[in-house]
Length: 92
Image (cartoon, rainbow, N blue to C red; front, side, top):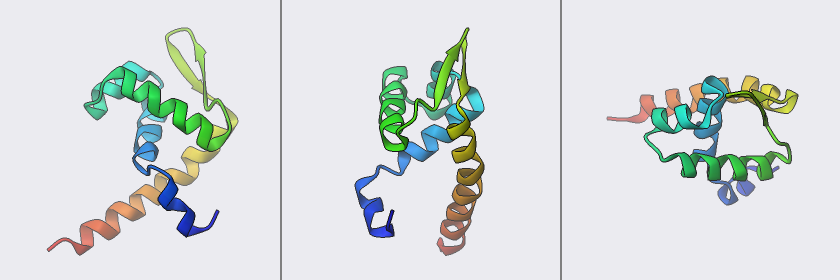
C-alpha cells in the first residue's frame, strides 16, 4: 500500500483495534472508547474487511486474537506511539 492510499482508510479504526486487542471484549472496548457497542462492532466489521482476516474469534466471553491480529498489534503499537509523539511535539 502506498501512503497516498491511506486517505481511503479511517485511521480511527486503528485506535479501536488497539483497544480491542487490550480488552478482548467489544462491550469493554466500547466503554473505554466512549462509543456505543454497535459502533465498535461496526468498526470491527470494517477492520476485518481491511485486513481480510477475522482478527478475533469468540472464546466464551472473550475474543481471542488471530495470529494476523497479533502480528498487526505488534507493529501497530509502536506506530501509534510514534504518531502521538510527533503530534505531541508539534502542539504549541
